[in-house]
Length: 239
Image (cartoon, rainbow, N blue to C red; front, side, top):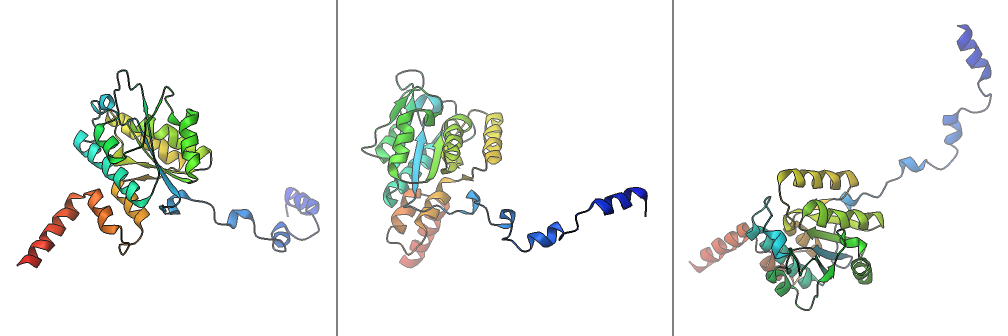
């Protein structure tokens, strides 16, 4: 044995080894399951929907999705939320200035919901927005906004920091170039915030195709391929 090894052996404690000692105690917390937002499914009675800055002026700059698709998706998501009893919170900024009003299609989809007009860039920093979400009593939060990397990402980050299970709806959000889209998605991924599509979010909250609201939900989602399949099926039945 080398002098160094002999010295280490002599100085080693004479009691049980750390491994043996730990075996007499409860398992380490490192072995316990941890909370993972990616494993938690949305439920209609625990989810709220926050839609930020879906405004006419901002839509003119969107380039990562067509304006037609973006309008379709956010309106469909809002309609599905209403059918399922999921609270919808609208907020907008500079509505009297360059960004203009909330798109009329979205306002029509959620009658009675008044946009919270604010100056804060991060919607969550306006106390009225955070309070409106808190008032729902829901801890799962779907967020969609224009632009993705700011208007959707910032409140999702802030909500998650306050303990909410926040998700961002990618195809009900939009941004102005590929770099912004990439940066936003990377930041969300780094924060552990899941990204969803509008139809999956709604279907996840539906939960069961035997639900009496299922047909109404699929109608609101208006997924082109599903509509086509339904038309083919109906055509076959009529023959």
